[in-house]
Amino acid sequence: MSPTKPRGYHHGDLREALVASGRKLLEEKGIRGFTLRECARRAEVSHAAPAHHFASMDDLLAELVRRGFAELTAAMSAEAERIKGEPAARLVGLGVGYMAFGAANPALFQLMFSREANRIELDQGEAGADGIRRLQAGIVEEILVDASAEVRQRMVDFAWASMHGFITLVLEGEIGGRDSSRGLKSRGLAVLAAMAETVVRAAR
Amino acid sequence: MSPTKPRGYHHGDLREALVASGRKLLEEKGIRGFTLRECARRAEVSHAAPAHHFASMDDLLAELVRRGFAELTAAMSAEAERIKGEPAARLVGLGVGYMAFGAANPALFQLMFSREANRIELDQGEAGADGIRRLQAGIVEEILVDASAEVRQRMVDFAWASMHGFITLVLEGEIGGRDSSRGLKSRGLAVLAAMAETVVRAAR
DNA sequence: CGCCTATCTTGACGATGGAAAGAGGCCAAA
DNA sequence: TTTGGCCTCTTTCCATCGTCAAGATAGGCG
Image (cartoon, rainbow over all chains, first blue to last red):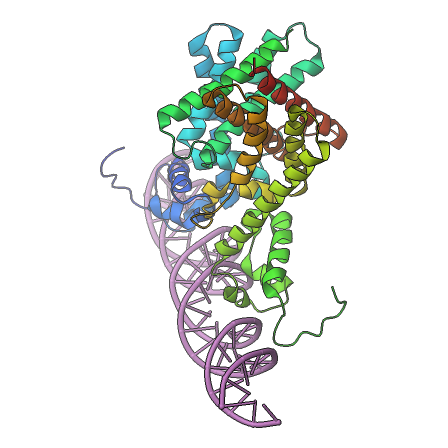
């Protein structure tokens, strides 16, 4: 933030600087254009400096993914809490937060959900997307208090799949390629509404 | 196919050999482990040979993606045609074909739908996933003959999003991590059934 | 005040994608 | 059948990459 840090040999907070430059680089160049050396360059540090903060490039990417999941979960919570109405409305809210995060961080979002193809492993007991499922399961079970465990699980699957599929296809340009952002939002809301309605109806 | 091809200087059909070894390599090592030189090695040619058939590594990846979409579309058609019943049942069939392809080719499937993050561009007038949308739109419009164009479009969005989201999350291990393949299939079918029911209900 | 150690730099290695130039073999025209 | 042209493949080279090993620097603790 300071306009001219007169930094000498030591950086001060290289770890955070690498996370920041890495995140920007990821969005700019895509995962396959991501380079540890370029991250270092942008942090104005030698190419080997990152090694003292991240064991490998994958370790830095894993950190980006980890923080992405934390942010995503927070965004969903915030949006659901902002609503505070019927459970169904809050369920839609979760989806709005989810999609907004994806739209704002397309490359990171795609990386978070292509860990398998990209061979990125979080630490063993790592949360990953557990927070997301927990949030959804909480609201779905609120709607389906009387339903069987199986129906509830299947509606959690269904709710997650709908919102995840939609934003994923949008980010790929498969849905709404030439739509305005306004129109796209309305299509997303329509999908979320249909999803919530289906969950509610499962309560009989 | 011949057990010992005594191939001399010329390979015979290097292009196809590269596509084949590339596809295997992609599934083995993931997109970030994919290497043009390793493809060449597996086809038993020098590392520069591929250049005469693919302008760049991305060009080979684009070809894999292109063929993936063709296969995926064919798998969906075949499964829907095998059913031949109610439109709703055929809609589920499309989803079954879609998910089966994804499960059989996880890395390729993820690449096909992470083109943006991976900066892979198909040729300008290229089909991509258009065939998929067309297939779904056909059946959805059969179900919703009397609905407005907007409702139909939104149900196409919804149908695609549901099936795409589910298989994507399964491939990531986010859904059904420790489920049997049998149990997973049943969860997938449940999602497809809920999706189809929602589409049918949109017909009023 | 002086050392200690975390932090950062320099330099090197093997591997990669790509370009350039030459060798090899197929085929069609004479 | 011979010959010339051209497509295929190889060899060599370059810049860049991730990672490792050593050395330089400096902030902080004794």
